[in-house]
Image (cartoon, helix red, strand yellow):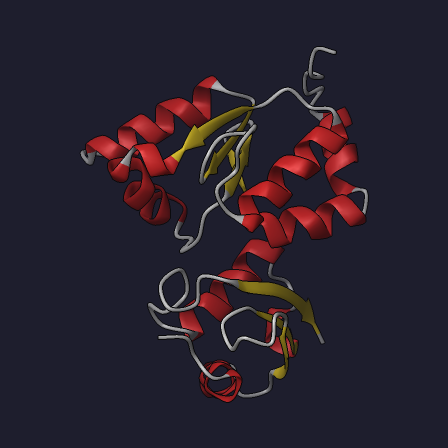
Length: 76
Length: 111
């Protein structure tokens, strides 16, 4: 089951409350998304840690239901 | 480490300067993200090894735990985990992969 973009956004914000999350539906099929996540909490973390923080927010869904989430992150 | 998959992964990572765990092969990538990762490595002109996780379920699951990373592809350079295709693209666009290749004197692909 694909996830709705609002669900993705809400899960990220639940775990990273200050996050500014932009979700783009890449293919219009509700299954291929790009997420851009900006958070002050990313400061001092390298890209891998920043991405891992977002993956952690998505629980076990990344790689499963969410097989096609393009992710970019930035420290605020 | 006692997990046999992790031991095999560690050997692969240590034996190859540049190794991409991917779906499919360099010639026939089986997903868009793996395809993008290969395009970046080829554009940099680097010599690299690939491991097709679709041919090896133990590695496919093991690499996710080994790197604490839920998706494939995954790139390792000189034993260091660099991330997946999104990070590769960011680093490529920022010129960071090129400078890393120069710094670490990574081998070029044979023409």
